[in-house]
Image (cartoon, rainbow, N blue to C red; front, side, top):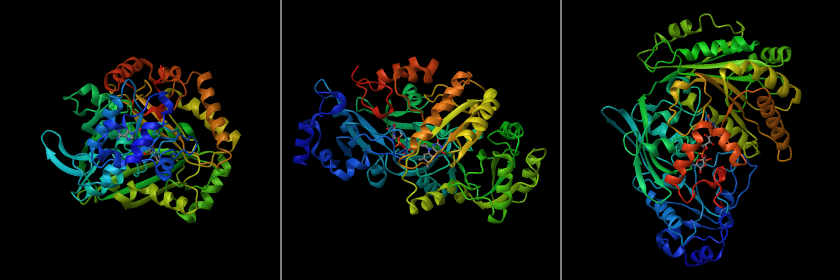
Length: 521
Ligand code: FAD
């Protein structure tokens, strides 16, 4: 550790010019947890996107939240200077958002591995009035582990992402969306309380009643205001099984009309409501199933493929309804009722019945397959957008039917599904379009190492189309190059976002990879 302290003292931090971490103020125990070996550095220099590379000076492997607080305090109290710090969940960002060029990356999953490390490392389930059941979960925990632990108690979180090997702190810094969002809200709407280490190194508990400004800042806050070490997540009784259905459409307006009808039934305790509504494009250049889940029976692939050849783009509605012992006799009737009057192509409706955990963890199988083929760690020039309902038909005509078909390079999943704005809380930092219903559109491209630019150009072209035709979209998992674009993204929320930054991270220490604030100003 002596060597490491020397190393840190003598090497300048690139982002902050003459700044350096005051190693003398780091407790010995902490310097032992700071790694500078090539493997640690290179692991923290890349992310799932595999496009951006930024090298940190060191990686902290904390065993408890106090380790992180000590690091942040040393950055904050540096003699007239500071160094950047980025919490890194699983680094499943695609544009360097969890990187800290010349600073310190905090490996949050290391907290989760130290279960004895006190607050922030474990998953514990409790009940209290008026919250009901909830789980206290470390910020570095994977949602997959939260699911497993809560299921032991017959309970489960209600709002998910499609893929569960993401961290609680990472998804809460964005929103955490999936087919459940229309009814249960995004994951950020299902948190009661958090422990956050702010930019002065203080560990603060916050909730809608206690330090509410910090609470709302952090949710959807892109890591700008503090490091989440614990979140109190809402739980409900876990269902046992899931009726999982897909229906195919050749007509986009039929598809969106049905999606919008289905998400209009969104009462939290409403019986005749679905639990999950998504949708995606199917195109002839890709197989009917993507890595996100294998669903269609193999024997049906040929007729689906000929439908795709005939129509070029087919829209696939994907829905799910949960059930348990109490509702197993009524679930089919409930579904029949919900599906009455839907306008899909009648002979293209498919249904499966699967265990709840298999439904939620449906993307894992694809991940393991791609990993085995060496195709998981390729570049991912993803683009995720929120499109107002009033312009989604224009988006279909201009983007799906024109740009995507013409370029003919999209083989990965393209998701399209609506959500209700009233399930989002405007006090939070997350940004969504200003309409009651908006769609998420996710272009989840995988590319080769030499050709990711063509997807980047396609992304640029479709964004220009939206700009030219006045489609006021918002980016999800945003990435912008300059302050002007960030101002535009946040719109009326920008002033407050900046004020919150000045209050909770005055030295602009956190998550520099988001490129929102420039520390050299
Ligand atoms: P990271 O990428 O490591 O971090 C993201 C940002 O949050 C960074 O700025 C980081 O500094 C900051 N951060 C991380 N941890 C903390 C913390 N504890 N406190 C404060 N800030 C922190 N998203 C969805 O909403 N729905 C989906 O269905 C979905 N599916 C996905 C599927 C795949 C295969 C992948 C790769 C991503 C998917 N995502 C989805 C995106 C995902 O939500 C983001 O990548 C998110 O950033 C979570 O990933 P992570 O935990 O690795 O966080």
